Image (cartoon, rainbow, N blue to C red; front, side, top):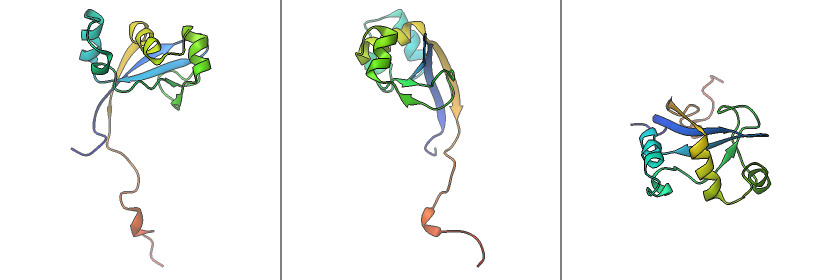
Length: 114
């Protein structure tokens, strides 16, 4: 299977001033964690990186959330605590990501007749 194929699961949390997104392993892992909080977050969350979309919902450009942004929204800048709040209060979104687009071999140069 080419890289980039497969389902992509994320949690979108609409905050007061920003929209936050985290990527998770899959929907089943999130549901299992919500039913049993003793499951380690490492088995649920794909990365502990929290993204903001600048009020563009779950779409748009993903930028890293600053500590100040996290502090303003969640009253803490600790990634673990913010991720837990996003998992508990956010909405799960799944999509199939297609194969990566773009040039496949940049070393071949332009494909135009000269």
